[in-house]
Image (cartoon, rainbow, N blue to C red; front, side, top):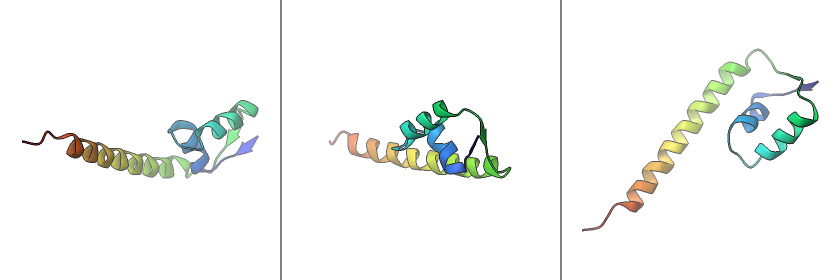
Length: 68
Protein backbone atom coordinates (compact mmCIF):
# COMPACT_ATOMS: atom_id res chain seq x y z
CA UNK A 1 0.00 0.00 0.00
CA UNK A 2 1.22 3.46 -0.91
CA UNK A 3 0.16 6.45 1.14
CA UNK A 4 -0.10 9.29 -1.37
CA UNK A 5 -0.64 12.97 -0.89
CA UNK A 6 -2.54 15.19 -3.28
CA UNK A 7 0.59 16.06 -5.25
CA UNK A 8 1.24 12.44 -6.19
CA UNK A 9 -2.41 11.93 -7.10
CA UNK A 10 -2.25 15.08 -9.24
CA UNK A 11 0.86 13.82 -11.03
CA UNK A 12 -1.04 10.66 -11.89
CA UNK A 13 -3.97 12.49 -13.51
CA UNK A 14 -2.46 15.70 -14.90
CA UNK A 15 0.36 16.05 -17.43
CA UNK A 16 3.43 17.07 -15.45
CA UNK A 17 7.13 16.30 -15.46
CA UNK A 18 6.40 13.75 -12.70
CA UNK A 19 3.49 11.96 -14.41
CA UNK A 20 5.61 9.11 -15.72
CA UNK A 21 7.05 8.44 -12.27
CA UNK A 22 3.59 8.49 -10.72
CA UNK A 23 2.34 6.05 -13.35
CA UNK A 24 5.25 3.69 -12.64
CA UNK A 25 4.50 3.93 -8.94
CA UNK A 26 0.86 3.04 -9.58
CA UNK A 27 1.88 0.07 -11.73
CA UNK A 28 4.19 -1.06 -8.95
CA UNK A 29 1.38 -0.98 -6.36
CA UNK A 30 -2.19 -0.04 -7.29
CA UNK A 31 -3.42 -0.01 -3.69
CA UNK A 32 -3.19 3.60 -2.59
CA UNK A 33 -4.40 5.38 0.49
CA UNK A 34 -4.74 9.13 0.94
CA UNK A 35 -5.92 11.49 3.67
CA UNK A 36 -9.64 12.23 3.52
CA UNK A 37 -8.82 15.84 2.66
CA UNK A 38 -7.31 14.85 -0.73
CA UNK A 39 -10.51 15.53 -2.71
CA UNK A 40 -10.73 19.10 -1.52
CA UNK A 41 -7.03 19.67 -2.14
CA UNK A 42 -7.31 18.05 -5.59
CA UNK A 43 -10.11 20.46 -6.53
CA UNK A 44 -7.77 23.33 -5.67
CA UNK A 45 -5.03 21.79 -7.81
CA UNK A 46 -7.50 21.40 -10.72
CA UNK A 47 -8.63 25.01 -10.37
CA UNK A 48 -5.01 26.21 -10.41
CA UNK A 49 -4.23 23.99 -13.40
CA UNK A 50 -7.23 25.35 -15.31
CA UNK A 51 -6.26 28.96 -14.55
CA UNK A 52 -2.71 28.31 -15.75
CA UNK A 53 -3.93 26.63 -18.94
CA UNK A 54 -6.32 29.50 -19.64
CA UNK A 55 -3.46 31.96 -19.21
CA UNK A 56 -1.29 29.89 -21.55
CA UNK A 57 -4.05 29.92 -24.15
CA UNK A 58 -4.55 33.66 -23.78
CA UNK A 59 -0.84 34.21 -24.29
CA UNK A 60 -0.86 31.92 -27.31
CA UNK A 61 -3.76 33.76 -28.94
CA UNK A 62 -2.20 37.15 -28.22
CA UNK A 63 0.94 35.96 -29.96
CA UNK A 64 -1.03 34.48 -32.88
CA UNK A 65 -3.16 37.56 -33.59
CA UNK A 66 -2.63 38.74 -37.14
CA UNK A 67 -1.00 42.12 -37.38
CA UNK A 68 -2.71 44.62 -39.65
